[in-house]
Amino acid sequence: MDAFTRKKGLPWVLASQMFLIFILVFVIAFLLYKLYLFDEYNKEDSLNLQHINCIQPPTLELNSKVPENASQKSFSGHFKKAAVVSDNVICSEIGRNVLLRGGNAVDAAISVSFCIGALNYPSAGLGGGFLMTFFRRFDGKCLTIDALGIIPSPANNDTNPIENGYKSVSVPGELHGLWTAYKRFGSGRITWNNLIMPTVHLLNEGFPVSQALEKLSKIYGDKFGNETNKDIRNLFLNPSNGDYFREGQIIRNPQLAETLKKLALTNDPINLFYGNNGAIAKQIVEEFTQNGALITRKDLHSYRSVIDEQPFLNSYDHRLVFCGSKSSSGYVKIQMLLSILQKLYPNSENITSTNIEYWHKVIMAQNFINTELGELNSEDQLKILLQNITQNGFIENIIQKFRNNSSTSEMPVKEEFLSLNEGDLELGSSQINIVDSDGNTISVTHSINFPFGSLRRSPILGILWNNNLLNLNNSSINNRQLSPTSPIIVYDRESRKIKLAIGASGGTSLQTFSSLSHVLFQVLSFNKTLREAVDMPRLYKNRLGIEYESGFPKTLVENLNKKGFKLNKIDYSSSLSLNGILREGDGTLSAVNDYRVEANNYPSGY
Image 1 (cartoon, rainbow, N blue to C red):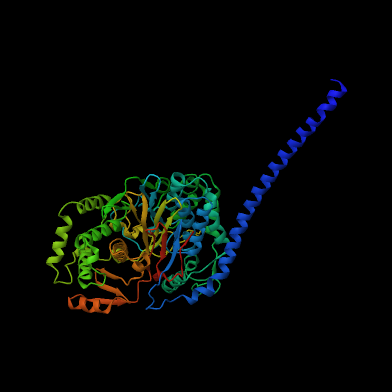
Image 2: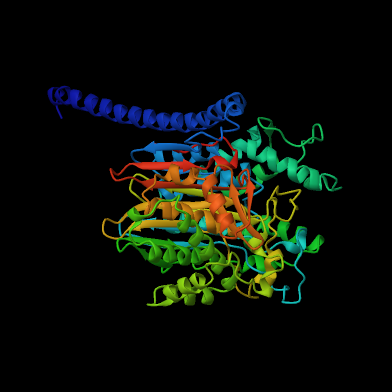
């Protein structure tokens, strides 16, 4: 090659080198930008946490008690695309952030669930389980996940139910169910660890005590504060001063934070928590063995959550469809009561919710369901009952039965239902409802059975264990336990859009059944707004009588008394709260948190 040619080719060599340098600089800049975003993500979580800690106490006290004559008591939000409601606004905000980052309703529900299990620990967490109802928008399909506790193999029909302690603990399904939901139905856009780490930060840096947590701490601190085990005492009492936790105080749980961090960073959380060789599983088995629990290594290793792609589906007014779990006894009772009311009042415009005859029939219908059905103990019972509801003449026969007793305030209670059972027991449960921008919807109820479960917390893992075996006599051995909790989704079969997602936290199973039925009928048949229906004073028919909340119309009380009913007034059932999301006619979402929980809570969304 001559000198002229080499000189002519020089600019091309320089241009090639400059191009390669430009590409290299661009790649380095891109990597630095991604690293910056990751760092900002962690900073954002920390700043959000500090912001939450700072703003909690001053505003909450102002709204602690809602005036009795207030027309709108519950906290509500109106959103165009997506909504999140839970029992803690901090957790709802975490779910909202997941949605904004491209996650779907399942991703958001998982992140909120971990948060609720940490911040609302008396009612949920890794030591318990859940029922989840999931509506998938693109194909209009509804399915459920059963992650309830399983009865350990050493238990049998002769095992005496124990209210608390390690012998009351069933195999917890919370983690298995959340991982199953993530792997099967998550968006794939949010990593597993990013769904857990916000809660880890909260547990390490501290989170503020809610008003509801203060109330529970006082109740159970007075009852169990003299326990010698500090891990139990510290559930309700502030270790720094020995007093129960107060609203606005900061709680930390580094043991649970470390457990969640390990679960967040592993590629196989199921093996870690349930496997024969899992480090956490070994700690659980060792703890249970040392304390006389019935759960064995085999029980833990064999646990499986169950996806049901053919859940209970029930039509309502031809177009709407109810979807619920086959493991929910409460769902079936709700369907029966709604079927009775629909048959009695096919034209809702002809009746008002203050009509005396309406409430008389509601009481008689509740009374029939409570006394005739009692506790539903198996999935087969639930299936048969739901099949009967749709048969011609079945509901009419029920109506005729209590019409024949219309002059009598109480139907005879069957002897086997007179003893204390699940209908009389308060539930330690927590409700989450989420609708994402694509219309995918989650309704999930977490539970550890009683508030504070077994009153046993792992000193190493920080997990509060359930006391599901208290209900052992209501379940079939070697089968999964049924639950009175009722996470419900109602959707439109033609448009494939959800109409309503709703569920309840706390209360007794009878209160849950009565309240959910009442709100559903008011919204779907009386065309009340969700907030109006939730705010309305409630009436509960239990085995011992009838309770009504403050604000229930005086004329109704007087007229029901004249009919022979004995009514007892209560302020309101602060242990029971509903939350839900309703799709309005214009496609927007109305989300409501029940004022009764006294948590100064509100929905989140965008």
